[in-house]
Length: 450
Image (cartoon, rainbow, N blue to C red; front, side, top):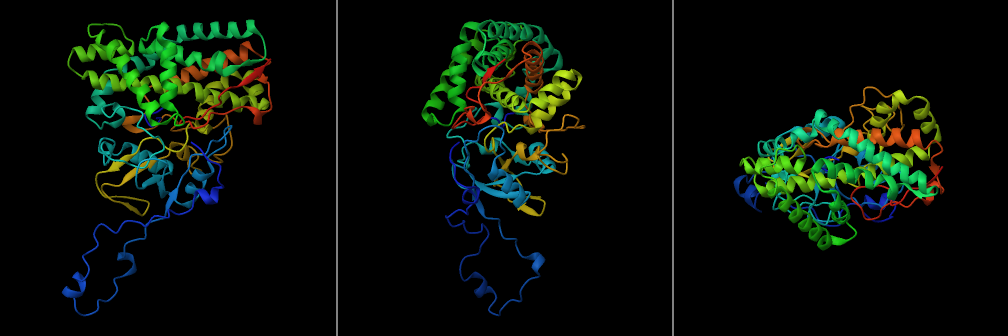
């Protein structure tokens, strides 16, 4: 998942989009009462309409529904139809923020230095999460050049060559999990038996986390990624996870290994990054690695409710890489939006003036459904080409683990479709339980048989 990756209710969509009952703040540049009348005693002629300031769009409340399956958020759908740039208010934080939903605009904001992550620090921007997932010294809240410096310290682990180094061991670990699945026999929970332990094992392998510590990693990550346990539980888990990585990285300052914590330890030892920065990046990467569990859960839920798609992937294995890209584009990976940015200058987007100091969100989910880029975006099309989706983000904060996540998806599809040919849901689709109060969407369990 991207660095953005880091919900509740059932009100009808029209109510969810009701205007904020709070009055909007006064314009920033409104003169004191009486100023104009004192300076200009005679009535002024009205300025041309094109010179008048445009009215701001209403602030829309955006509750994060606990959606099942791969249903697209109905509130986001309405916001996309309402305009390319709207204003939203989320469950936590203060005030309102701009929301950008068109593909080209999303990429522009994500890649434009006039929109800053660092400027968010110290501000209570409206947000979904009750707490910020990354530490404030972490890469998620840095701008270039500091962001570039910190990302460079672990780049070797996430290059194509670095990811390929873990392919063989990842396949072995996955085969062992499927061996156990087949040995125990149906029915089974695919989430518990395969989709959860496999990404944990892979990211821990890449991070250099000992196998004995994987269960604790998983527990911490789930508390951080859930909004239902509250701010205190999430913050406590983040402190404990940070303390773990602080100790591990400090022990590896002289390491020459190529796992992430060893690379970070060596960078700290050379004085290229601080220990605090290294810990923040390690926490973010560990959390992002486990998000694959939930993405894969949605992917297999979708496939198992569409036997025609499964049959095509079995009979045409050569299309699987392209199909996985289309699934990544289509699947709604998260609830609401991720981390905001702050405009450092006045910027106009499609006729809407965003003032310096305004918070701005981009929606990669909406960008992946932009009909100007993806014809018939609500349809899964395994022949879609090109497919320039932004499921892993864009710009400086593009997910460093994007290639790793794609590798894991390919291995899972190959192994489960080829080794478990009769794989199917063990319950009706509407009885598959999905996670509630979660920032990242996915099934709580995926009951299967074969």
